[in-house]
Length: 118
Length: 110
Image (cartoon, rainbow over all chains, first blue to last red; front, side):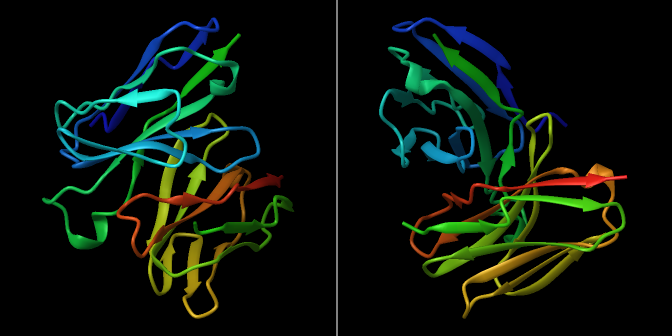
């Protein structure tokens, strides 16, 4: 039972480079999220999706793009990497219509991607 | 935006001690989550609650909706409880997105 899988685990980028952080879940969850975690700060929501084909901005979307072509996958794209995007990125998922009501809202997290932009 | 404040920021305890971590938030919520972030970075959900109290093993979470306050208690603490404990809230009108506190770093020494 894989849960939420993120790749890569670590990456170093040069300023101006692009990359895609991959996220896939096998729990048939409708909702998926991307967060960033900076040292000493709480997780901040970058983008989220309530289902295939539907995405929306969170608190800190600038410099990022997402797509949701399937239920399982929710990649996060950095187009022109900047040092301010150095962070740990977490993907999470929640809400399956197949689950009991109380379990619907629990978020399941991937292991994280540690990104440095130099 | 719902401000989520946790206290203390850092906590060191001896094995066996009873531990309390506090969380306060500023506006009405539909649910509050407690999560644990392991030293390796992984995050797992411990509790989700909207009223009262929940217990799982040595962990107990309580919430007082009127006072906008929640506590996470660890009984008979153990070094393997060392982690960052994160409080997060879901607002009444924010769908399923969560607003996170900065976390409480707990170290339990033998």
